[in-house]
Amino acid sequence: MAIREMPLEEKYDRLLEQYLLYQLTNYTLVKELGATDKYYDLLVKVNKKMLPSLLRVAFKAIKTLAPSRAFNQLVDDFTYISQMYLPLENVEVDRSSEGEAIIKVNNCPALRKMKEIVKKTGLGIDPVELCEFEGRMFRELADDMGVNLTSQVQENGCSLAAVLK
Image 1: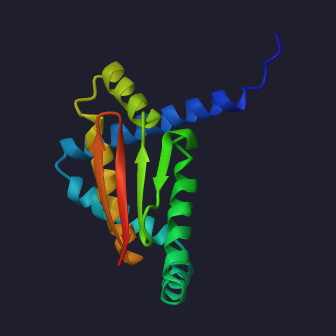
Image 2 (image 1 turned 90 degrees about the horizontal axis):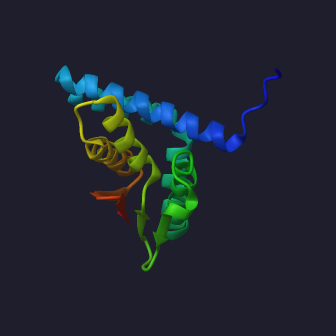
């Protein structure tokens, strides 16, 4: 019997499920150990290091010369990167005013999958906690780039409001 190659869509689904399982397991353990603040600080620290320092400097320079353009590029980049775990059809970006954007995630497949994983594994957390935790981290990263970011988790998704400082 020959082994067939796994279709790309199936690879994506399985990788997402495995990634979310690890995220939920890690968060549950950290919470049980009472170390969520330390975990948060470490995540912010390593995520800041993963952003090239040149990118932050370039963003701040471009923001000085063309603030709207820099802001729009940041929103576009965030939305693009979000496709690692969110299909674009679930993401809605509203730029109704200059220097402001609202990013809505509707029927979030990651949240839905996390709820399934928690139910199946019996992990004692509400997946919304992890969404709120990540929103808090995004706020700090955005603040470093001169953007005020607020996030709100809803029943089946979330909303991020970004405002250029």
